[in-house]
Every structure is written in C-alpha cells, then in structure tokens.
Image (tube, rainbow, N blue to C red; front, side, top):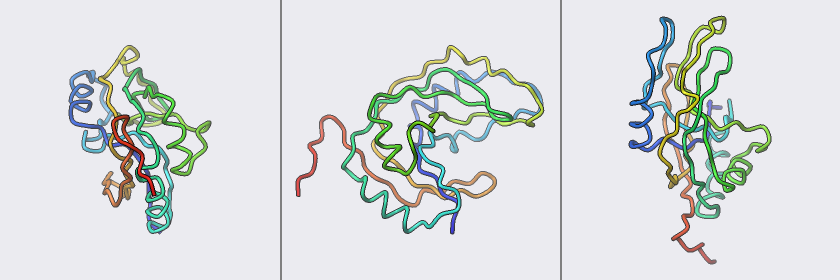
Length: 165
C-alpha cells in the first residue's frame, strides 16, 4: 500500500501569478515549495497504486476538463489555502476519481503553521488567471513533502472530439 492522491498540478503561469501575490507572513509560517502546489481532487490515503491506476485509465479521454481559477483564501487549523473556482465539469471528475463531490472543497495548500496559531493570509480578494488542465494526475505522497507522479488521465477539451469505439 502506498499513500496516494489525485490532483491537478498548477501550470507555471498560474503558480507564477500566485507566488507574486503571496504576502509576508509571521514567524512560524512555512510556505511549501511551489513545486508541491496542486489542487487535490481526491486524497486516497494508503491505497493500492495498481487499482488507482486502473481507475484513472477509465477516466482517460472520457470526461471533459473543467475551467479553473484560483480565487480567495481560507484556513483550516494549521493550514492556509487558496480557493478554486471551477465550472460544472469538476464534480464529475471528483466522483470518477473516487470521492463524493458534496464532501469536496477544492483548494491549493500554500502555508502551514502550528495548529494553535491564528494566521490571516490577507488573500481574500485574490483572483488568479483561468486555465483548463489537460490531465488529472495520480501522485504518491511521502513525508517531506515529496510528491511523485505515477500516472495520469488525459481530459477532453472543447476542441477535442470524444473517442469513438
């Protein structure tokens, strides 16, 4: 068993825009490296990589890609995040990847701090550029954090015809 999650990596222009807008935060707040930024679609926890890769293969080129935009911010205890605005295609992808869409809060984790510390990000009005991801990626997750892509499902874009078989 391996610790797994399915996510949309942030494209460089989106990550650049976000990095340019990050505020100075108090001591004790850590910004994970931008190479770790992603929109988690499903955190699978300890799971079988082969089974998850098989499920991902069923998504490949069968579901449309959502339009995404980073917007606003919020916190969980010890975590700061940027919100995600998405079109109606996202719930189907969340469900296909293995999670009930009603349980899902799309976000990008951008900061961590001790759970007993109160931090305001000051990014409630943040709005990033819009984009359409080309793939949904399955990652392994190790402490550190170290995220390694092990598979992906290509997503349909409006200009792509659906495959016929």
